[in-house]
Image 1 (cartoon, one colour):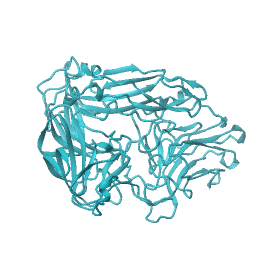
Image 2 (tube, rainbow, N blue to C red):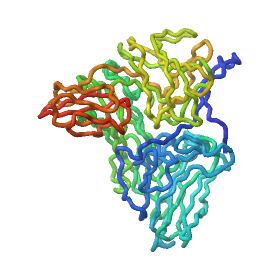
Image 3 (cartoon, rainbow, N blue to C red):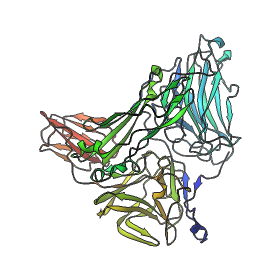
Image 4 (tube, rainbow, N blue to C red):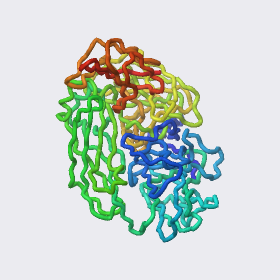
Length: 609
């Protein structure tokens, strides 16, 4: 059990040691993980019901944030995510630690106790016996990108008997082992052979035991399978799974402004990296397809089979990293007359896996070529903050051509205990040198913690700033010694783009001391509202207002129907009435698509309630 804070110092260079007054650090803290949907676009559906039948299978590849309520009873505090584990058997894992879904520690006392719990719905095992070879198995990893459990910490499996008691099977207590590699997944299996377990209300649960005071003693669980007629020794399952979320197709950025995009050279692209994992005993030469689609008009921009001769998967638990072919700007030239692109990238593994396991053969990720310049992948694993008044953190970006910065997006995650409301000075620089910064503008802002995970706050600059091609910096200075949390994405390493000042001089971060990217983004918004989404689409004399909209959106002009669409292409509202309520819709950028006769029109609109 480990009670130390997870601290990664920014001050890893000699300058820190030359002055006793320089104490600022970036400190990683837990974030709440409530307010998430439990479905992602490729999700399949399970049969609903109070009692389940065999097989019971969940690899979490169709859930996000919270485990599926079709399978699990107690589940809210276990975080389903794609980024905290290292190369799991399939994409997404269940992460157990010492904080609940809000990021709140279970206790202020360091005494070990049960923390996160994942409990199944009842499963009907009546009519079966020991000879049916019913086994529960799952894969587990300690630490990953979290905090390593100690020898007195554990992951515990319990079974529910027909006399309403929970029992721990043989080897059902997995003890922490600080000597194990943090990227090691192991398979645990349990033979259901106790007569007390063969009843219609059988349940199992997995729970973590450890330090309840924070995000310590981290365990990751994946690929849970309960079924009969299993042979565990050397077990082969006809399944090859996408294991990790593919990285960006860009060499640095995750999102790029449209007005910048076509001025970048081909070196802006790189192959997207991901891992494949084999649960099958045979040899497999993977074939996969990368498809990138404009979600507004469903135009396919890129649809190319990827190399089938890179690496061969050789048997159970073999896993290897694959890289898609790097794109070039020529792939994007047919879209250059638009003013924005809202994109879905789908990576599909072409397998002959058993049908029950094909759900993990496809993954999707979304990005924009619109108005955002960002490094992060949109998902924070931790909060990161500086702990000294007058401490200043800056993020470097590079523009390919002159453009106008209008806003800055920042993710301030929920942490516990919640910090006092703080005022920050947001500044834009075009140069940092020693104790000098070339200031182009800025604004005073107040920290507003996000009401759900990964939701950014947008701050409008007092005056839009025209920036030349080349480097610029988004900087935030605090005036309190209290902790001010910024979202920190550990899966995209742009640490060399982070600068800090804790005295009179600026320093560039050393990558050894801190891996990841701050969730601080530059926004280059413009005043265009029309997107021509097809050859048949044309502008009309429609007025959609107000923009930004608060409670209602109004359409002035003759229409037959409208659709309010989010950037993933999902239709949120539809109808013909010229007044559209925004109730229940999150703040952000959306599209209003209207039809009048055979003419259609699409406009961007911001909802800011």
